[in-house]
Length: 110
Length: 110
DNA sequence: TTGACATGATACCAAAAGGTATTATTTATA
DNA sequence: TATAAATAATACCTTTTGGTATCATGTCAA
Image (cartoon, rainbow over all chains, first blue to last red; front, side, top):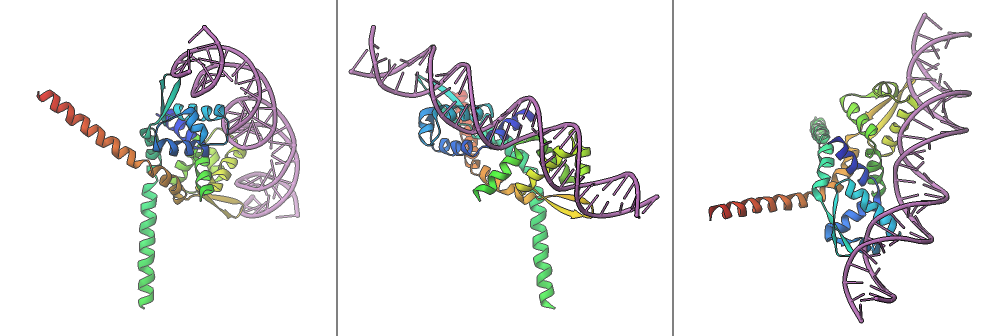
Protein backbone atom coordinates (compact mmCIF):
# COMPACT_ATOMS: atom_id res chain seq x y z
CA UNK A 1 0.00 0.00 0.00
CA UNK A 2 2.88 2.32 0.73
CA UNK A 3 4.43 1.32 -2.59
CA UNK A 4 1.11 2.04 -4.23
CA UNK A 5 0.96 5.61 -2.97
CA UNK A 6 4.56 6.18 -3.97
CA UNK A 7 3.87 5.09 -7.56
CA UNK A 8 0.98 7.51 -7.76
CA UNK A 9 2.87 10.41 -6.17
CA UNK A 10 5.77 9.79 -8.50
CA UNK A 11 3.50 9.70 -11.54
CA UNK A 12 1.84 12.96 -10.51
CA UNK A 13 5.09 14.83 -9.94
CA UNK A 14 5.62 15.59 -13.64
CA UNK A 15 3.55 18.38 -15.25
CA UNK A 16 3.35 16.60 -18.61
CA UNK A 17 1.92 13.51 -16.93
CA UNK A 18 -0.66 15.55 -15.04
CA UNK A 19 -1.59 17.16 -18.35
CA UNK A 20 -1.96 13.73 -19.94
CA UNK A 21 -4.38 12.72 -17.19
CA UNK A 22 -6.50 15.80 -17.88
CA UNK A 23 -6.62 14.90 -21.58
CA UNK A 24 -7.59 11.33 -20.75
CA UNK A 25 -10.33 12.60 -18.45
CA UNK A 26 -12.10 13.86 -21.58
CA UNK A 27 -11.86 10.57 -23.50
CA UNK A 28 -9.78 7.45 -24.04
CA UNK A 29 -6.87 7.97 -26.41
CA UNK A 30 -4.23 5.95 -28.27
CA UNK A 31 -0.57 6.72 -27.71
CA UNK A 32 -0.46 8.60 -30.99
CA UNK A 33 -3.48 10.70 -30.07
CA UNK A 34 -1.92 11.62 -26.74
CA UNK A 35 1.38 12.44 -28.45
CA UNK A 36 -0.42 14.78 -30.87
CA UNK A 37 -1.29 16.98 -27.89
CA UNK A 38 2.36 17.56 -27.03
CA UNK A 39 5.51 18.75 -28.75
CA UNK A 40 7.65 15.86 -27.52
CA UNK A 41 8.22 12.58 -29.33
CA UNK A 42 5.87 9.59 -29.26
CA UNK A 43 8.59 7.63 -27.44
CA UNK A 44 8.75 10.19 -24.64
CA UNK A 45 4.96 10.18 -24.33
CA UNK A 46 5.00 6.40 -24.17
CA UNK A 47 7.43 6.53 -21.25
CA UNK A 48 5.11 8.89 -19.42
CA UNK A 49 2.17 6.58 -20.09
CA UNK A 50 4.15 3.64 -18.71
CA UNK A 51 4.86 5.55 -15.49
CA UNK A 52 1.18 6.53 -15.24
CA UNK A 53 0.25 2.87 -15.69
CA UNK A 54 2.75 1.79 -13.01
CA UNK A 55 1.13 4.33 -10.69
CA UNK A 56 -2.26 2.74 -11.49
CA UNK A 57 -3.55 6.09 -12.72
CA UNK A 58 -4.37 4.73 -16.18
CA UNK A 59 -5.01 1.32 -17.73
CA UNK A 60 -3.98 0.25 -21.21
CA UNK A 61 -5.97 -2.11 -23.42
CA UNK A 62 -4.65 -3.51 -26.71
CA UNK A 63 -7.09 -3.04 -29.58
CA UNK A 64 -5.67 -4.30 -32.85
CA UNK A 65 -2.47 -2.47 -33.53
CA UNK A 66 -3.53 0.38 -31.26
CA UNK A 67 -3.33 0.69 -27.49
CA UNK A 68 -6.14 2.51 -25.79
CA UNK A 69 -5.14 4.52 -22.73
CA UNK A 70 -7.92 4.87 -20.20
CA UNK A 71 -8.05 7.03 -17.08
CA UNK A 72 -8.35 5.13 -13.78
CA UNK A 73 -9.59 7.85 -11.43
CA UNK A 74 -9.59 5.52 -8.45
CA UNK A 75 -5.80 5.32 -8.73
CA UNK A 76 -5.61 8.87 -7.41
CA UNK A 77 -7.50 7.93 -4.28
CA UNK A 78 -4.45 6.76 -2.26
CA UNK A 79 -2.99 10.22 -2.85
CA UNK A 80 -6.23 11.89 -1.87
CA UNK A 81 -6.30 9.79 1.29
CA UNK A 82 -2.75 10.73 2.20
CA UNK A 83 -3.55 14.38 1.65
CA UNK A 84 -6.79 14.01 3.57
CA UNK A 85 -4.76 13.65 6.74
CA UNK A 86 -4.04 17.36 6.57
CA UNK A 87 -7.66 18.37 6.30
CA UNK A 88 -7.80 18.59 10.08
CA UNK A 89 -5.14 21.31 9.94
CA UNK A 90 -7.17 23.26 7.42
CA UNK A 91 -10.17 22.93 9.67
CA UNK A 92 -8.17 24.12 12.67
CA UNK A 93 -6.83 27.01 10.61
CA UNK A 94 -10.32 27.93 9.54
CA UNK A 95 -11.37 27.87 13.18
CA UNK A 96 -8.44 30.10 14.13
CA UNK A 97 -9.36 32.55 11.40
CA UNK A 98 -12.97 32.65 12.50
CA UNK A 99 -11.91 33.22 16.09
CA UNK A 100 -9.48 35.94 15.01
CA UNK A 101 -12.22 37.68 13.06
CA UNK A 102 -14.56 37.44 16.03
CA UNK A 103 -11.87 38.82 18.34
CA UNK A 104 -11.23 41.67 15.90
CA UNK A 105 -14.91 42.53 15.84
CA UNK A 106 -15.09 42.52 19.62
CA UNK A 107 -12.11 44.89 19.79
CA UNK A 108 -13.75 47.26 17.32
CA UNK A 109 -16.90 47.32 19.42
CA UNK A 110 -15.03 48.70 22.41
CA UNK B 1 -0.24 29.37 -9.68
CA UNK B 2 0.74 26.57 -11.98
CA UNK B 3 4.32 26.91 -10.73
CA UNK B 4 3.00 26.75 -7.21
CA UNK B 5 1.29 23.42 -7.69
CA UNK B 6 4.37 22.04 -9.40
CA UNK B 7 6.58 22.92 -6.44
CA UNK B 8 4.19 21.17 -4.08
CA UNK B 9 3.81 18.08 -6.27
CA UNK B 10 7.56 17.88 -6.63
CA UNK B 11 8.07 18.18 -2.89
CA UNK B 12 5.51 15.45 -2.20
CA UNK B 13 6.98 12.98 -4.70
CA UNK B 14 9.72 11.83 -2.31
CA UNK B 15 8.79 9.42 0.51
CA UNK B 16 11.34 10.91 2.92
CA UNK B 17 9.85 14.37 2.43
CA UNK B 18 6.32 13.08 3.02
CA UNK B 19 7.61 11.43 6.17
CA UNK B 20 9.18 14.71 7.29
CA UNK B 21 5.82 16.43 6.86
CA UNK B 22 4.19 13.83 9.08
CA UNK B 23 6.81 14.42 11.76
CA UNK B 24 6.32 18.18 11.52
CA UNK B 25 2.59 17.70 11.85
CA UNK B 26 3.24 16.58 15.44
CA UNK B 27 5.41 19.57 16.36
CA UNK B 28 7.88 22.12 15.05
CA UNK B 29 11.43 20.82 14.82
CA UNK B 30 14.96 22.08 14.20
CA UNK B 31 16.96 20.60 11.35
CA UNK B 32 18.88 18.47 13.80
CA UNK B 33 15.71 17.14 15.40
CA UNK B 34 14.32 16.19 12.00
CA UNK B 35 17.61 14.55 11.04
CA UNK B 36 17.53 12.45 14.23
CA UNK B 37 14.40 10.75 12.85
CA UNK B 38 16.24 9.47 9.77
CA UNK B 39 19.36 7.50 8.95
CA UNK B 40 20.61 9.96 6.36
CA UNK B 41 22.94 12.90 7.01
CA UNK B 42 21.89 16.30 8.29
CA UNK B 43 22.95 17.79 4.96
CA UNK B 44 20.59 15.49 3.05
CA UNK B 45 17.75 16.34 5.41
CA UNK B 46 18.46 20.01 4.94
CA UNK B 47 18.14 19.62 1.16
CA UNK B 48 14.76 17.96 1.64
CA UNK B 49 13.67 20.79 3.95
CA UNK B 50 14.72 23.35 1.34
CA UNK B 51 12.61 21.61 -1.31
CA UNK B 52 9.67 21.45 1.11
CA UNK B 53 10.10 25.17 1.75
CA UNK B 54 10.24 25.92 -1.99
CA UNK B 55 6.99 24.00 -2.35
CA UNK B 56 5.50 26.18 0.45
CA UNK B 57 4.75 23.09 2.50
CA UNK B 58 6.82 24.30 5.45
CA UNK B 59 8.16 27.62 6.69
CA UNK B 60 11.50 28.15 8.41
CA UNK B 61 12.13 30.66 11.16
CA UNK B 62 15.58 31.50 12.51
CA UNK B 63 15.77 31.32 16.29
CA UNK B 64 19.25 32.02 17.57
CA UNK B 65 21.56 29.48 16.04
CA UNK B 66 18.67 27.10 15.38
CA UNK B 67 16.18 27.06 12.55
CA UNK B 68 12.66 26.02 13.40
CA UNK B 69 10.83 24.10 10.67
CA UNK B 70 7.08 24.58 10.79
CA UNK B 71 4.39 22.76 8.81
CA UNK B 72 2.32 24.95 6.47
CA UNK B 73 -0.72 22.75 5.88
CA UNK B 74 -2.29 25.27 3.51
CA UNK B 75 0.57 24.64 1.09
CA UNK B 76 -0.95 21.25 0.31
CA UNK B 77 -4.20 22.84 -0.74
CA UNK B 78 -3.22 23.49 -4.38
CA UNK B 79 -2.52 19.77 -4.66
CA UNK B 80 -5.80 18.91 -3.00
CA UNK B 81 -7.58 21.25 -5.40
CA UNK B 82 -5.94 19.66 -8.44
CA UNK B 83 -6.89 16.22 -7.16
CA UNK B 84 -10.38 17.42 -6.36
CA UNK B 85 -11.08 17.62 -10.08
CA UNK B 86 -11.24 13.83 -10.13
CA UNK B 87 -13.80 13.60 -7.35
CA UNK B 88 -16.53 13.68 -9.97
CA UNK B 89 -15.14 10.49 -11.48
CA UNK B 90 -15.23 8.79 -8.11
CA UNK B 91 -18.81 9.84 -7.72
CA UNK B 92 -19.65 8.51 -11.19
CA UNK B 93 -17.88 5.27 -10.37
CA UNK B 94 -19.85 4.96 -7.16
CA UNK B 95 -23.03 5.49 -9.15
CA UNK B 96 -22.00 2.78 -11.63
CA UNK B 97 -21.30 0.38 -8.79
CA UNK B 98 -24.66 1.07 -7.20
CA UNK B 99 -26.38 0.53 -10.53
CA UNK B 100 -24.43 -2.68 -11.11
CA UNK B 101 -25.48 -3.99 -7.71
CA UNK B 102 -29.10 -3.09 -8.41
CA UNK B 103 -28.91 -4.82 -11.79
CA UNK B 104 -27.41 -7.90 -10.16
CA UNK B 105 -30.21 -8.01 -7.61
CA UNK B 106 -32.84 -7.74 -10.33
CA UNK B 107 -31.25 -10.66 -12.20
CA UNK B 108 -31.29 -12.79 -9.06
CA UNK B 109 -34.96 -12.08 -8.58
CA UNK B 110 -35.86 -13.62 -11.94
C1' DT C 1 1.14 -9.96 -50.13
C1' DT C 2 3.16 -5.78 -49.86
C1' DG C 3 3.42 -1.45 -48.08
C1' DA C 4 2.02 1.99 -44.74
C1' DC C 5 0.91 2.64 -39.89
C1' DA C 6 0.95 2.18 -34.75
C1' DT C 7 3.58 0.68 -31.39
C1' DG C 8 7.73 -1.75 -28.95
C1' DA C 9 12.50 -1.92 -27.75
C1' DT C 10 17.18 -0.20 -27.44
C1' DA C 11 20.84 2.67 -26.97
C1' DC C 12 22.28 6.88 -25.83
C1' DC C 13 22.61 11.76 -23.71
C1' DA C 14 22.25 15.82 -20.53
C1' DA C 15 20.36 17.38 -16.53
C1' DA C 16 18.26 16.73 -12.08
C1' DA C 17 17.92 14.11 -7.72
C1' DG C 18 19.50 12.15 -3.65
C1' DG C 19 23.23 11.32 -1.19
C1' DT C 20 28.11 11.95 1.22
C1' DA C 21 32.12 14.41 3.03
C1' DT C 22 34.43 18.50 4.13
C1' DT C 23 35.01 23.13 5.23
C1' DA C 24 33.05 27.67 6.73
C1' DT C 25 30.12 30.63 9.73
C1' DT C 26 27.34 31.93 13.36
C1' DT C 27 25.93 31.65 18.23
C1' DA C 28 25.64 29.88 23.06
C1' DT C 29 28.07 28.99 27.00
C1' DA C 30 31.74 27.31 30.39
C1' DT D 1 37.25 34.63 25.26
C1' DA D 2 37.74 29.99 23.86
C1' DT D 3 35.21 26.24 22.53
C1' DA D 4 31.47 23.40 21.36
C1' DA D 5 26.98 23.27 18.94
C1' DA D 6 23.86 24.20 15.02
C1' DT D 7 23.61 25.27 10.67
C1' DA D 8 25.44 26.98 5.84
C1' DA D 9 27.99 26.24 1.74
C1' DT D 10 30.70 23.56 -1.48
C1' DA D 11 32.35 20.02 -4.06
C1' DC D 12 31.71 15.68 -5.57
C1' DC D 13 29.52 11.06 -6.77
C1' DT D 14 25.97 7.77 -8.52
C1' DT D 15 21.38 6.88 -10.06
C1' DT D 16 17.15 8.44 -12.03
C1' DT D 17 14.66 11.20 -15.19
C1' DG D 18 13.10 13.17 -19.37
C1' DG D 19 14.30 13.38 -23.66
C1' DT D 20 16.05 11.89 -28.54
C1' DA D 21 17.09 8.80 -32.48
C1' DT D 22 17.04 4.41 -34.54
C1' DC D 23 15.57 -0.03 -35.58
C1' DA D 24 12.35 -4.04 -34.91
C1' DT D 25 7.65 -5.96 -34.77
C1' DG D 26 2.90 -6.54 -35.38
C1' DT D 27 -1.33 -5.28 -38.01
C1' DC D 28 -4.55 -3.14 -41.24
C1' DA D 29 -5.79 -2.42 -45.94
C1' DA D 30 -5.30 -1.85 -50.99
